[in-house]
Length: 239
Image (tube, rainbow, N blue to C red; front, side, top):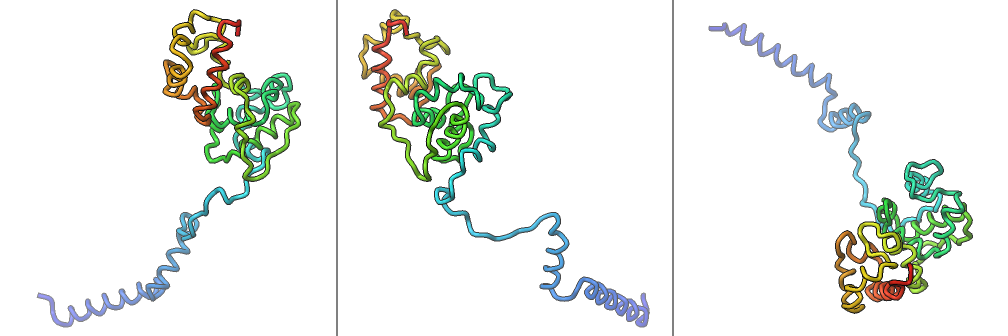
C-alpha cells in the first residue's frame, strides 16, 4: 500500500502538470476557440453569410462572357464537335442567321442535335442565351442587337416555317432517327389520314425516336399545331 507522503507527492505532480497544460493552451475556452480557428484557417473556414438573392436580380452576363464560359467548347474555331458552326464561319452560320435571332434563341434553349438545352448552361437566363448568340453570329456575318436585361423573346415573331427550318427539317428532310421524310408521301399517308389534331396529339406525347413535343418544349400547343400544319402541306412536295 502506498504511503501517505507518496500519494501526496503524486497528486501534487498531477496538479502541476494540469496547470502547465492549461497555461500552455492559452487559458479561457473563448481564447481556445479563437486559437483553434486560427490554426485550421489555412485548411478550412466556416463563414455564415446570408443566402443569395433571386438570380433574376443579378446583372445578366454579356454574350462574350457566356461564350467564353460555355459556348467556346463547341463553337470556337477548331472545336471538336464537327456539326457545331464555328464562330467566324459565315457560310456555316448564314442559314441559321437567316431564321432570325428569336428562332435561334428558342432553338438554343430547347437544344438541338448534339447541343443540350441552353448549350448546357442551365443557369443562364433567356437574355443571356440570346446575348451569346448575338456575340457569335455578329462575328459570323450577322448584325443583331444585343437584348437588354429582362427582354423577352417574341414568340409571335416566329413563323411556322422558321420553326420548322430551325428544328424539324433536320430529321424530316433526311430521315434521320427514322423520321418520315417530307418527300415520302406514302410514309405520311397513314399519319395524315388521321387529321391534324390527331397528329398534333402524337407529337405532343412523342413517338418512336421523336421526343415529346419534338424536343421543342418552349412551343405552345397552338405554335406546335401550326408547325405540323406547315409540314403536312409540304408532304410529297419533294421537301
